[in-house]
Image (cartoon, rainbow, N blue to C red; front, side, top):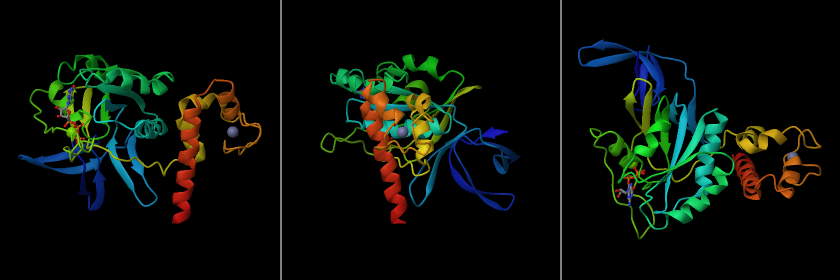
Length: 275
Ligand SMILES: Nc1nc2c(ncn2[C@@H]2O[C@H](COP(=O)(O)OP(=O)(O)OP(=O)(O)O)[C@@H](O)[C@H]2O)c(=O)[nH]1
Ligand SMILES: [Mg+2]
Ligand SMILES: [Zn+2]
């Protein structure tokens, strides 16, 4: 048995199949090459989807690490979308605040409190200076690193795996964005039980596969309230007796999170109507 380090379309016993980075496969070796015999059942599949297609990103990951940095600037909405997709698959998430050597780091850290207050762990480090603070969090996990281009995901891989020699590139000051240097998702093995997956920078992350119930459930802090609204089919918009709205009014839930939920729900509905 082996772990697929990358994603590729292939033929397995005459069937076309997408083997996803992180898939467990059985191989029949012939000299230096091998033929994939089977793909084992996945414990998780991390993916995004718009109204037209689904894009698999990594299989069998046990942890998502969203990488952000003060420069280039990052989108909290995108960070949260990634985490919601992970929650839907029962995958734990953490946030890596990279480039702590940058003077704007405190402001970036402040923005992350929206998530750390809910309980998501965050690890601050400088990949260029010392990646060590991340090591304990990686032990025993297959961790997918995800995030916008230029946040330093591949730099972290190079810092943790001196032989990896993965391509990295300066971000553009003028465009305030990375250069989409990494083009393929790739798994790097730390030890027998731990691996780190690097992925191409993201600009968007559609959640078309999450209907209203799944979406609400993906907001972990909403879970204790779900099923307790006055109306059984409450969409948590402006219905009377909505427990999520009451919890916001009582200061128990962050209004920014309920606003995001409503925006995502409507986005999904509009996309579905356009089909
Ligand atoms: N100041 C500083 N710069 C860093 C740090 N880590 C990475 N960088 C720089 O950030 C830039 C982008 O790094 P990459 O590792 O290529 O970013 P990436 O997230 O892999 O980008 P994509 O592959 O495009 O998604 C490079 O110029 C790195 O040298 C850090 O800790 N501090
Ligand atoms: Mg990269
Ligand atoms: Zn409600």
